[in-house]
Amino acid sequence: MPFTMVHIEVRTRSLVHWARNNRLALSDRDYLVHNAMRLAFGEKAPQPFEVFQNGDNSLKVLGYSDHTRDDLLKEMEFLAEPLLMDTFPQEAIRFKNMPESWEVGRIFGFRLRCCPISRKRDEKGRIIERDSFLSACEHNPEGEHERESVYLKWLQEHIRKGKGAELLETKVKGFRLSEFKRRDEQRKPKKITRPEVTFEGILKVIDSEAFASLLRNGIGRHKAFGFGTIFLRAAVR
Image 1 (spheres, helix red, strand yellow):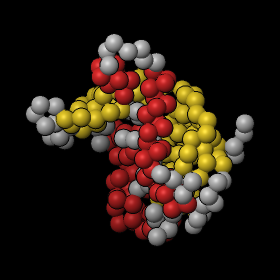
Image 2 (cartoon, helix red, strand yellow):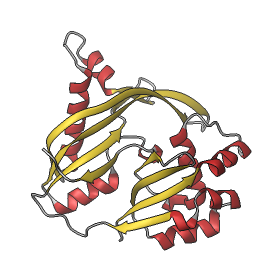
Image 3 (cartoon, one colour):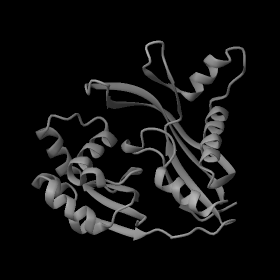
Image 4 (cartoon, helix red, strand yellow):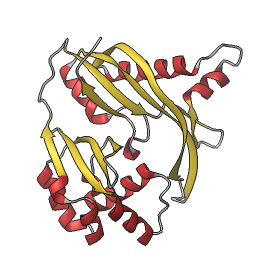
């Protein structure tokens, strides 16, 4: 099975035109790109991914995939309407093959934008999402909780569960509470507020296969909407 990094340029004007034709709100950029990619690429749309501003007239989607460039182009031929073909120009879809194995002990810098939440079921059996910081405050109301410390602990636990890497250094580079558009169990659109946190740090590979899975699967929830992608970089201390 291939393991690739995907770079997809998005023509903003065509995306906005498509969204207005389909009566979709423009306020949640990641949700909009998610919907457009699902209709253009189907189940082969990259995930996890992140959306970046790419100049004044375009966006850039960067993420991971188990498919090749030819797979995505073929899927577009079957599924995408003409305006989506213009939104994701074929000549601006680029791929690179990721390593087949990862050297144990190798150290990388990393960047990760994610949504640190906890989940539990209420008395009716429904799954409830909570900001992990608020959840920690509710679980131990007498304790002293720092938002950054709670988020760092959340990340540490998720990395530990993945079994592929060890965190050597981590810091919260950015935080905000963001309003997202999602669909409920009845598929009706609703607005939700969730924490958006960007981490930067240094990690060490401790298991080659598990590390590849960690990159493939991403971290946390809402990975289909632009969260949870681990981007590697040179380690600088």
